Length: 370
Image (cartoon, rainbow, N blue to C red; front, top):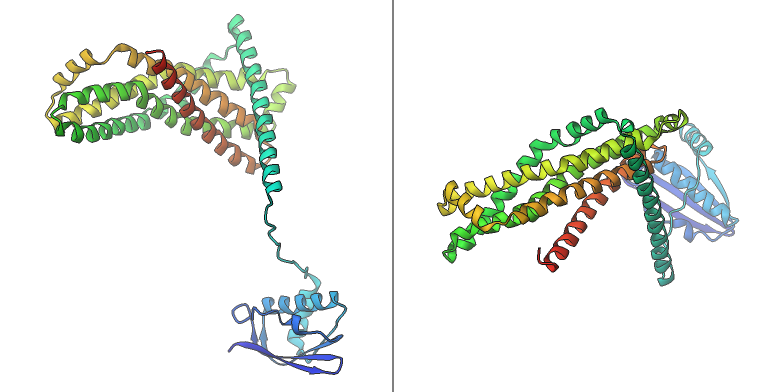
């Protein structure tokens, strides 16, 4: 059974007769208090069959809104159960008005752009301070090698690089397979089957293998570094370390960043080999080019500079991943929610800057003919 009401208008009085079941499923959406214009309103619950919390809140909101308009409200004929229900809800009731979403004007739009730009500049300034502190600590580690934490350095190579090898190998292999498979179909139409070696050799070693490897390590290690340092900030481990006179950069940042810088070339070399292996398999299956012929053409057509460019990019990508992820870790506030926020920012920032620097390298090296 639904719920409904009847409005009886008398002199200086509006009388509401309430009928049916007033629960969350039957509650009418109409705001009938707009029809109540007299100074006195009587709500008669004689014919009320049932009411739940949603219905009680509805009538309490109605009473509150009418009172704000200087209209006196009186409730009649509530049975004892419903009356106790109203009394209980009334003690803990707070009128909540729906928020009106104001439309942004052009002025607000430009203000939001300005605020975002200022926040971005502040972040860049903090990052350059962080970068300066890193190079300062690194310089003192170079002139005093005993300060360098070699055991931690080896641990982070194992944890961040060696343990990531399976997923890097699988991804690089699939990239080589897909690249070769797509090229094979197009080259076969022109009888230029052998040029699949040139395409895979240059694109994989020079661009795709370093880029894919860096993105995989960024997604895996950047998030890990940021979360670890964030937890250390929340538990005051970094504050305690600084209080005891230990440089947090020597203990936390330098081993992680240098581990990525030194180990990324190894990851890129393995990615090159695996992606080319994927190309060899597809070349044999799709174009009937055996491995010996593939490798012979590879030695003739692919300059060593293409492989060298990919390897040179690797430590730069490792440095970007390490420094950005550590910076975002030190940005974490003392809330668990901020760990998730800055971990996400860390991964997004590292992947963006890896792709951006890769594009800069490509344009610059092409311009100088390298």
